[in-house]
Image (cartoon, rainbow, N blue to C red):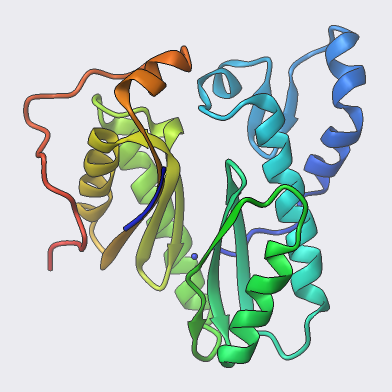
Length: 227
């Protein structure tokens, strides 16, 4: 079940090269292959709740979707983020027609199973704003990493205009706790959950390590950050 409660990503040449050389690299028994920050055959990839094939599909979706978006005229700043073939669109466009055109183009990309369109109709945000978003995203990731009752690598963090979007395959408890942690970071104005919710049984079946919940963790859902 997908539960829906923005950062400009460049086209990753390394991901394209990895897609081309995956089979040869794995069968030759060489060093772990790095794809967009994930290490195939290493610890980081092993804790990801997507299959290796799906992670590569997500890389391919972002490359192809970004290429299609660039072909459209009179666009603003659009970010395309894919997680488990669920695509999140963030950024700014001039109007409703452009917003719809971007979504249509991305939906047509092979392997995309759904699109969450969070594009804003507004002028492009300045460089300073995007720099702050980058810093905010880093702080949220660090907060998740410091927490002992969530698996930080289960969350994909996207920041846009001081809004944090959280993606991932998580249980309801993890979704709630992750949103609480993100909302606790200074500068975060709102947290939007774009999760695929798993049951505890489905998560256990993945065979991934799952941190135990802490007694201090609240059961509430964070919708916005404290003022």
